[in-house]
Picture 1: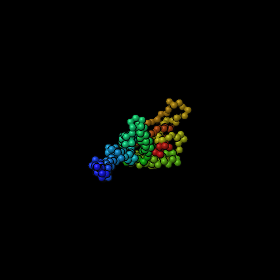
Picture 2: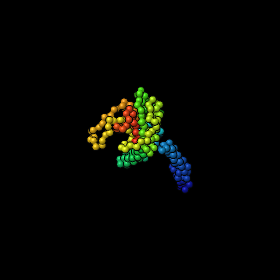
Picture 3: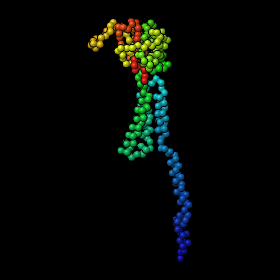
Picture 4: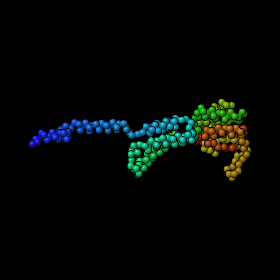
Length: 270
């Protein structure tokens, strides 16, 4: 006859855990848990190394756009486009988007990522976009401006003007005193003359002598004779290179053989 002890021995041979020896089973389970923990630790956040590289490049582009002193509109637009691409591609590979269910769920995740990055780019672009206007010229801009002035061997007198009580634009005009004087051009009174203009214009405009003052009642296609000085075209090209919008005003009261440059309201960068 089998006793209770004999039955326990038989069970121990077929199923060791049934005999109270649970150590091998616990060891196997704890081994799996440890292995799973190691595997999870290796994955980390689930972000690919290539995506980290793209994000670092995006940070470098953002810093360049922020600190580049004389960036043009084309450079800024190209930089913002590159920045957007460097942000969007790794964002679409984030685990939360990559592991989303194919179809509507993944499309919604990608759409939210695209919208967030677009909003960030718009805000950043508003700060780095080169708004039109005259600021303090860089050394490179000063050399370029003066190189154009040097092409005229016998320049006429330059009259720098600004509106009274318009400190911002008058300050922007002051830097051109030395720019002209250093290359042989002469500025009237070596100063920026504050002159009231009865028919003001916004922004920078040149003033030349004409045979008569144009009557406002005349049709638009009727004008006056004006001697177009070669000096005007040289200085105009120098301001065009600075991307400063300019215009031309003529009048009989303005002296002959003199080039007036009026820095009207809105010439300086806000």
